[in-house]
Image (cartoon, rainbow, N blue to C red; front, top):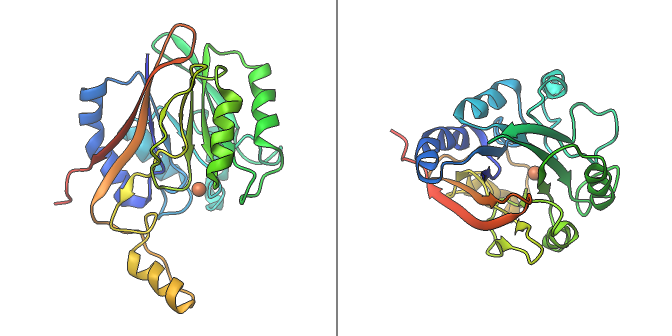
Length: 259
Ligand code: FE2
């Protein structure tokens, strides 16, 4: 079976790009399960019930998140309620939401685990210990992991930690796709970062002139989500009967231009 993972959808331009590109991706790749990182789907930061439902309507089966997941207070009840939305499992216990979920796809029970890196981001527990504890008691045919992390060394280390134990580790958060996507020797599909779904005429999704102003003048600047040249970025893994990856393919496609 085939899993399509889509990287951080940034704001309404990213949501539009996904919505308008998904039919072609479905036709071309015929994924059995679509997992989308939606933590920047609301105005470029955070997620709401409305933006999550927009991603589900575009074809996401499961939404993953990360450090901005609690940006919108009104979404906490939804994050708690929605069984197809996950937030990093190594956040404080009792925070809204769940760290992993199990869904059915192509007749198999697939666990989707969300973890946050512990370097440069705030977590309650080590992502390594946390994923070990989840896998030890998991009732599923196989697992895939969204590792939302800042630092490439930690992401690469997680790939080796989980090699042969999960079908795939998809790195997210840094929004720039890396060139290390492959199947590791033990059978785990891995990439440090799948990239983002949003404007490429941007700095990680924000209008370049605003980021440049802040970086050059070092003055507070209001950031707005960039809209031009939207691309959809992600990766595909083909998962075999053993719950490991046979094949890894990076996905980077321009969305249809806006009318
Ligand atoms: Fe993030």
